[in-house]
Image (tube, rainbow, N blue to C red; front, side, top):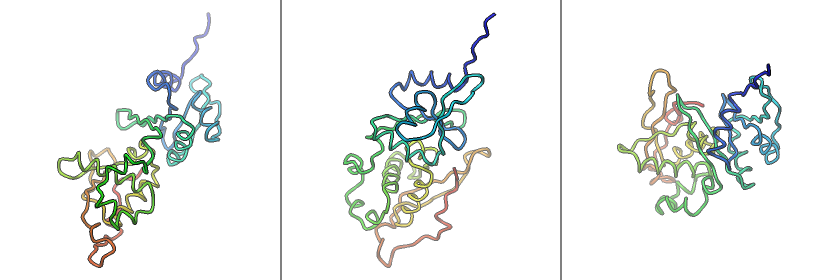
Length: 230
């Protein structure tokens, strides 16, 4: 009697999602790493120079590439520059969250992006003092969240940042810069449930209007600390 070939969960998930995202490089968040399988692993190797290996997954030999989650932004930029789309899959609670990145969705300097920020903010000393593209990209996202909020408060988690192609380090530094120049403030730190990480709620701030002036109110470092960590 012939032995039935085992199909690993990784192969099943990859085959199922490739039907939905046929033109994307699929990357799965597994613990502290992103992993790509099969032809996506080979593309990661050819485009980014990432080493790949044949790994035994439940009896199924699977080509796999793996890299730390904080390197997502660096590697995805290379893939996008080479003309590929990148789709990430991150498990949040009991559901999977997908984010597809294209060259149009990750360039914070594009005209369409800049037009969403009011001229009074673009020309302000506070905005001009931002030192990184990540800080400007995070601020644009904060404006969108503020406009969609009922009470002016909004959250922006590490997982959401990673799904948008922003590394944990750039995310943290970007928020710190925005608070430093008075564009945003932390309004509350709380837990959604006892089993979940605490989250940070933000609000847009008016402190930026006095940035560079003696009336500008600087916040202590303790008041700029995020509640959650990746």
